Image (cartoon, rainbow, N blue to C red; front, side):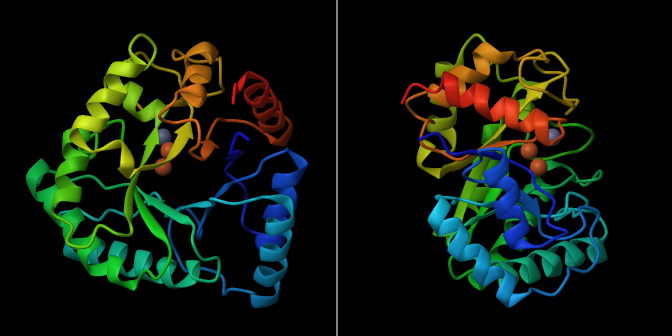
Length: 277
Ligand code: FE
Ligand code: FE
Ligand code: ZN
């Protein structure tokens, strides 16, 4: 069965997210571990988590992809911002042990003028500091569109980060279709070629989740503006080929398209209909 869901609001707790997922026929979901702009996280409500875990098990909801606040910058030129990113992600990893065995994805950051090599190194250093804190959560580096001084915009850069991480047992990659398209990878005309390239540089065994988004902009635009499935320049057909690709079809797919609940329900229904497995 297709593993698909979308970003859900975590403000009402875990069980509420589980019920929201069920309403739109999702069997996975993503959520921000705290306000996406950073700040402190709400304390974990253990009774809520226990109810959620039971609910999720009954309903086949799994492979959650928690998202770190997108304002964190592990490779800022400012040491206090790098430190803040590390402390926040370390705290998230502790909290995520309440819902064990899932994923936690993050943006590798923007080097803010330090140069790509320093950025990649600082990102890897942070991972070396925080990964030992994870018991069961797999941390996923997200592929980025390359706007501004963002790192992680090429498969080579992601591979370089991974190569500098000592313990890779809890490390993986989350591929965002809008981001790689904006980064110059033509998944419309050459999905096989792009995935072959991914395999040769990063290794497909490291690919653990997909952010399934259309893009408002053309391939290589480095813009990062998401569109609804079929309303962007990637298009519905190409995104249906993504969910059905033999190397990808069993991964969890997370929609980050600009939708309300009804819109997500429609996209999920359409993609389930298009799924061939
Ligand atoms: Fe993201
Ligand atoms: Fe994404
Ligand atoms: Zn994006």
